[in-house]
Image (cartoon, rainbow, N blue to C red; front, side, top):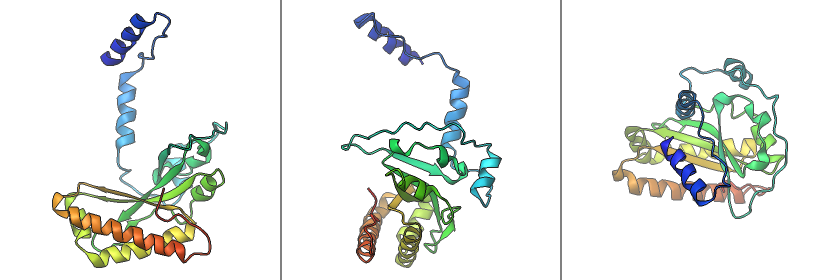
Length: 218
C-alpha cells in the first residue's frame, strides 16, 4: 500500500496531471481473495461441473463479449481449475492464447491418475477452440517425495505418457502443462530425461494423427 502511494506521489510530482492511482481498497477482502486464489483445491470432490457451479454459486450471466486480437509476439496463458465448474462459459477466450485445465492429479507410483475430474466430459475444449484459444491439460505432482518416486520410475513414466496421449486425443486438446512442485536437485537429470521422453513421444503421436494437433503445447 505504501509503495503504491509513494509511486503515485512521485508521478504527480513529475506531472501534476497524472491521475491518482487506485490505492483505496479493502485490504482485508484483498487478502481473503489472494488466499482463496492460492488455495490448491477444495478438500472434497463433486462429480459434475454443474455440481461445482451450485456449490460455489458460480454464475455465467455476466459475460464480457468484446472480441480482441492479441499481440502475435506474446502469449497469454490461463488456468481453469476444475472446481470452477462451467465458469468457462463466461470467459472471453479472445483474451487468451492458451488455457490449461487443472488438473490430472498424478499417481507417482503408477503414472496413472488419482483424479482427472471432469476432463472427459467438459465442454471447455470446444468452447476455447471456437474462439481460437488452445487448451492443454495441466498435470500436477506436489512434494519432493512424490516427484522423486515418479522421476525415478521409468515404468510409471511410460504409463503416464500413454495415458496422457489418450486423454489429449479423446478431447482433441493441444498439449500438456507440467506442474511438478518441490523437485530435489538430485532429480535434475531424471526430470530432464523425462521431459525429453515426453516431448518426443507427444510429437511422434501427433505425426501419426490425420489432423495437426499440437500435442507438445505452445
